[in-house]
Length: 151
Image (cartoon, rainbow, N blue to C red):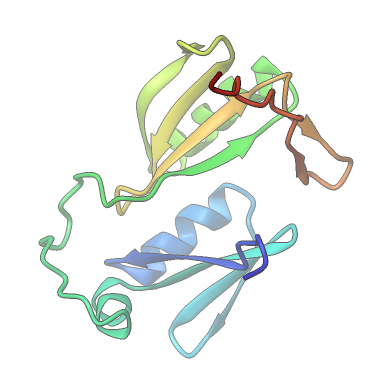
């Protein structure tokens, strides 16, 4: 298996509301058969009815509609400056999202905050100078130090 993520699909309770939210953040999507596809660099973010997604995965949708608990997925959007973190959190709140962790220097030492979209999907917005962003926004991971070998 190649090391790649091609699509992230978010199960949403109201497709029109979710599409409007992401459009307010500046994302351009294309709706095809009650599914909205957003090109996101070398991958895609997809919005699809939560119940249909659960059924397609062969899983029960045990969370009630509108329940804002953690759904087991977190998305991250890295930016180039601390100011961009603040601006994106303000934009998300104005678009109808909820800031769940205001921007601050986190325990690891970089500046970040978290918002959720109207369906409770968490997005971390981070400025981590150790993670390079290419001109096209692609994330370039650093060469992490190898763990010490057992002797």
